[in-house]
Amino acid sequence: MPKKASLILLVAGLFMFNTGCKSYSEILKSPDNTKKYEVGMDLYNSGNFKKALEFFDLIRTFYQGTEKGEKITYYTANSYFQTKDYQLASYYFKQYQQMYPKGEHAEESAYLQAYCTFLDSPRAELDQTTTYKALSELQLFIDRYPNSSHVAKATELMDQLRKKLEDKDYRIALLYYKTGSYQAAITSFENLMNDYPDTDNKEMYLYYIAKTYYEYASKSIPSKQKERYEKMVEAYNNILYLFPKSKYLKELKPLSEKAKKQL
Image 1: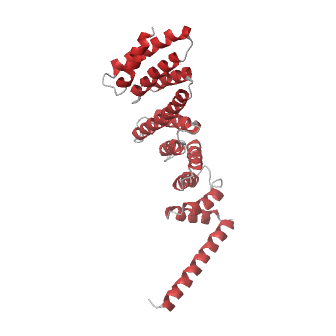
Image 2: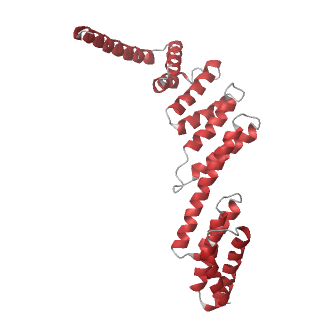
Image 3: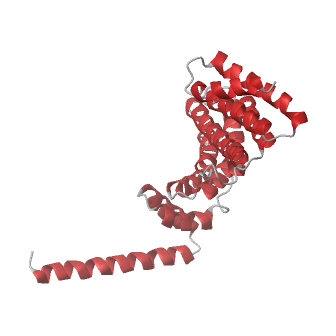
C-alpha cells in the first residue's frame, strides 16, 4: 500500500477514534437514559466492560426494579468479574440476588458471588478471613441450590479452601516445633488431625507429635519426663499401627527405644 494511502487511513482512523470518544462523552453527560442504556449494552456485548460500566453506573438507579434494571445490575456484576475486580463483582452479584431474588440470573449470581470471594482468598501465610467468608458463601449456595449444576464445582472449591486453611495451621504448628514451643506444637498437630479428619497428612502429623514429645521429654524437668516419654511411645505405636510401612519409622524406632529405657 502506498505511503500516502496509509497516512490517509491512519488520519481517518484517529479522527473516528476521537469522534467516538467525544460521542461517548456527550452521551454520558446527556439526560437521555434510553441512549445511555443502548450504548452501555452495545459496549458490554462488544466486550468493552470498563467503558460499559461508566454507562451502567449512571442509569442503574433510574431503571431499578424494572426488567432493564435487572439486566443492568447483572451486567454490572459480570463486568467487574470480567475485569477481575472480584470484590466489586461479589458486591453486585449479591445486590442482584437481594433486588431480584426470582430473577433469571439469581442462581448464577449466588454461585458467582461465592466464586468471587474464593478468587479473592489470599495465600496461606496471610490472614484467612476472606477464606472463611468464601467457605460460608459456598456452603450457603449449596444449601440454597442443592440441585444446581454448580454444586460439584462449589464442593471442589470448598475442598481447596480447607486445604489452604490446613496449610496455614500446619505452618503455625511447624513454627511452634522449630522454636521449641513443644506443648503448643503438640496441641497444634493434634488439632490438625481433629479439624481435618480426611487429611492426607495424618502420617506426617503423627510423626511430628512423636518427635516433639521425645524432644519435649528430653528437655523437661525429671518429674515431667516419665509422662512425656510415655506419650512419645504411644504416638510411635499409633503411627506403627496406622502406617506400618511409614517412611518415618526408621527415625522414630530408635527414639521410642530410648524413651522406653527412661521409663
